Length: 67
Image (cartoon, rainbow, N blue to C red; front, side, top):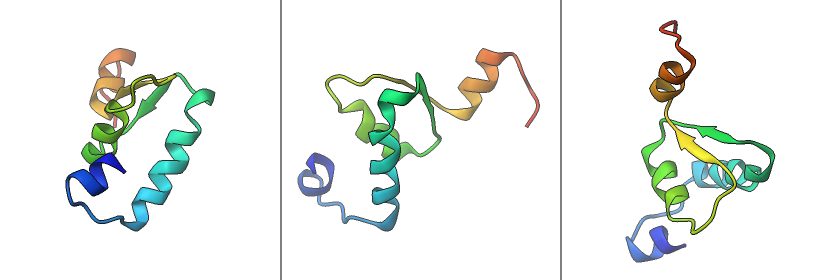
């Protein structure tokens, strides 16, 4: 709500999917996403049970260069 109302963004269909992914947060340790808008929203959470990283960060962490 902070980003939608405060920044004048409209609610899109993908926001509902993002809400479900974020709601599942207690069940995983790392959320991997390259969705900049979703990542920005998650980073506003004062406490979250998961870390956020992009796919390139995941590949680097796992030591894989394969796509």
